Length: 387
Ligand SMILES: *Cc1c(COP(=O)(O)O)cnc(C)c1O
Image 1 (cartoon, rainbow, N blue to C red):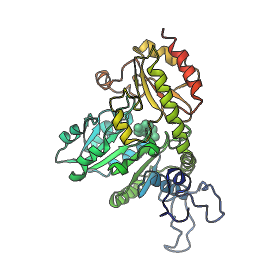
Image 2: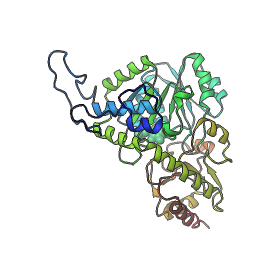
Image 3: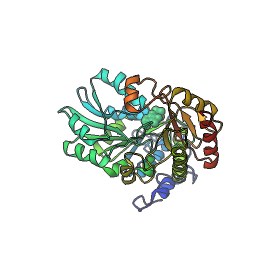
Image 4: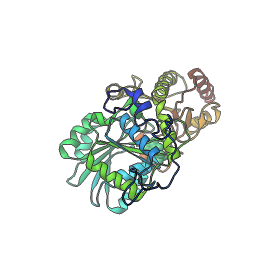
């Protein structure tokens, strides 16, 4: 796609944005530029590439690709989702206050609470399902609202348009972690967010073989600062990982459609299963924010959680599954099953876990793109071990 101003839809952008054939050889797949430096012709004379922490053509191609998918002007790729989030937080100064979704990814909470607090940033954790709670938490020092929607593992949503209506007039940055939906189903910048962050480790790469992160945005001053930080702090994504994520995004649309299709069928099956007490999936009519999910997202994805009633029941299911793999992480082609209370959310105090609905009987599924009949059969035999 030579003319970047051509209007193009999602799958076309996923395959072509930032993916011009290599100018030296015509290679259709952007090469992995495995180099630390670039030959220069004379003092200040170079091809735009000086040192590979600062610029790398493979990373640049990915950054253009991801920016196009989130409908942002600029993108930056980092060594992990946490490195991306950490870079965004360096837009702030000592004394600044941040409002955060109370059920955010555990690693994000750990970074804010155990690292950034030491440098004088202040954080308030509120239930962002209710936008009024965000407005009530605003102080004179507030500079940012950091939201994850839907959240892990109980799939609660934040109305991004409603929160943007609070942040915009006050000049606060609205940052959205869009890892769970991917830009295929939800594009926060179009809903009023200022910055989107991703763990590309999950759906964007999609094959459980790379760790990475990204930041996408429109604001030019913040983009300049992020480029500066990316170079100054140096938590860049490697050429190999950049290439892997680009290969992942080319099939993002077809993968997400299948994750969504399988997710809906597995959720419906679980909702009708006698051993399942409750299912958390925004695509079910029983989800308390189903209407918002339909409005804000164009699909429901492959993440869901189910309540088995007790630690013992959860243990039986997790040990009995044969096709689903017991493990942390999500968003890969293979179905992963996990136990939030002892795995991803073990560091959250028990009382807080209870308040968030993360009980000992809760089991989380990242529904992959296997044949759904096989997934349902596996879950059925595992759940029947409870009886
Ligand atoms: C995994 C994850 C992160 C952290 O990303 P890493 O690539 O593991 O550093 C952040 N947010 C969400 C929602 C995640 O699922």
